[in-house]
Length: 158
Image 1 (cartoon, rainbow, N blue to C red):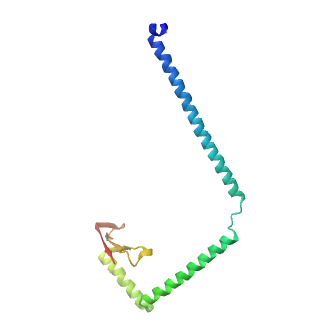
Image 2 (image 1 turned 90 degrees about the horizontal axis):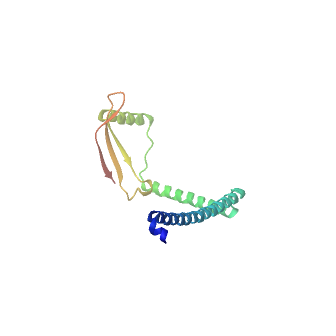
Image 3 (image 1 turned 60 degrees about the horizontal axis):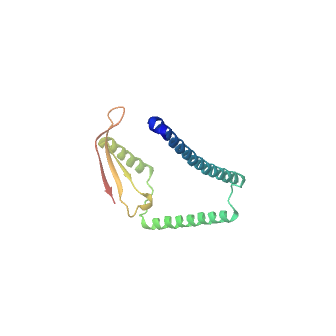
């Protein structure tokens, strides 16, 4: 203890060195245990991957039957929905080719003259209850590259 009083700096330095060594050893033990946990997790994952690679990739017969039944059920529900939608909509008579061309020409002329392009976005799974969003762009087509001009207007349409 006498040497500590005579050379106080050396005593504090050795004490600090001992504390740093203890702290380093505890850090090493902590990281070693974390590395062991991760090593065990890696081995478990490798074993599971190896097991999956060895197994047959095809479903069992029972799962195949279930999936086929769900597919058939979905097909039947889709067919029933299609028939129900047919009863709720007005039948559209087929257009003769000359009327179709006339309507197409009219729409193209309106688009070129007005230079407005409405884009309508809707939720196909929720058409009956959710509004469609309509965005109207005004486009300058006088140059080689069309350019959007003005502000984009939008509204909801039911």
